[in-house]
Length: 340
Ligand SMILES: Cc1cc2nc3c(=O)[nH]c(=O)nc-3n(C[C@H](O)[C@H](O)[C@H](O)COP(=O)(O)O)c2cc1C
Image 1 (cartoon, rainbow, N blue to C red):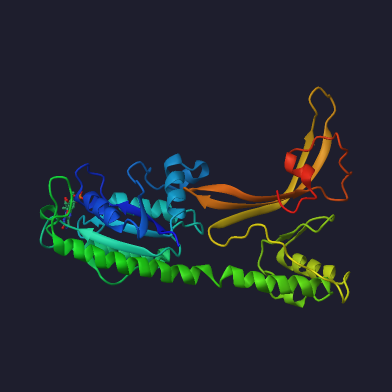
Image 2 (cartoon, rainbow, N blue to C red):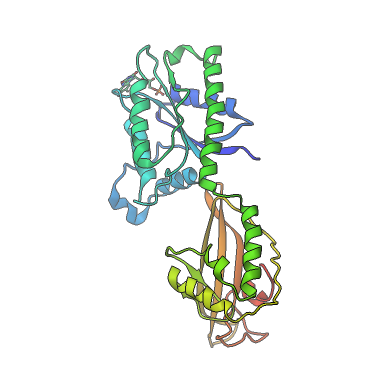
């Protein structure tokens, strides 16, 4: 299994920041166990709801980098017994727009530090307070408050304190286990087990029994169904009804087999809908109307959505595409293939 990806957020912008040096030590120590990547927060405009209308690029980058991670590790100094404003701003930016927080459900870890003997506790716990509303399950033990941080590293910023290395090591072991445990809750049942059930559902369906399919069909909007050769259905209840109706055209004695070319469960997003276009062939003055039904599945890679599957076909109700007709994209021409 590949190492889980962790967004590391440092609560200080100083070039010589002790927090950043500690974060770099932690990232180095985590190699092979976690794929830790620094996510910068210094360029984030101060949170202002008015800016959401044209999302600043720095917000967009930050949000997608955090969204692409399996977990978030905060390494922060303490400012006035709380967290630095720059860190709070990053938390606020990631938490909005309402309902689209990139932090939601992500396992979190906190390391706080102070160059003094007393400190770091306030920042650590002020940050933990935000996790309640952010809905982030945070690792409880071991707690990591690093005191006298300036004396624990050499001039190159490497830990010289074996006690600190040991503490970070046990923190990382616990954090890896915590991410795995929290991830299992998120992931739901094993998808290959589910696909075996899906095979049985498909077999029942072609034998006229829609009940097993009904049991796995969503009853929450949004939902869509592009039936073969028919008009799109939308809305959870409409879609569920269409499935039940569809099974009635089949009777006992039918056979079915699902030939899965590509399947995945994880950080996926999809859209399903209709492309309505008018297209011209080169040199022609007349535009032809074309309607293409599309389902596309995307995977989060390196902080951005990458297309991993596309299905496109032309509804039977639309005029059949002549051999020479140009469709808005090549995939539409290959409608009889199982996958594009
Ligand atoms: C505005 C401000 C408030 C601070 N308040 C605290 C504090 O409450 N507790 C503490 O231990 N240190 C406090 N410090 C000192 C920081 O811990 C120290 O500057 C530390 O090195 C900052 O972390 P960094 O090296 O990662 O930038 C404060 C520093 C600043 C600039």
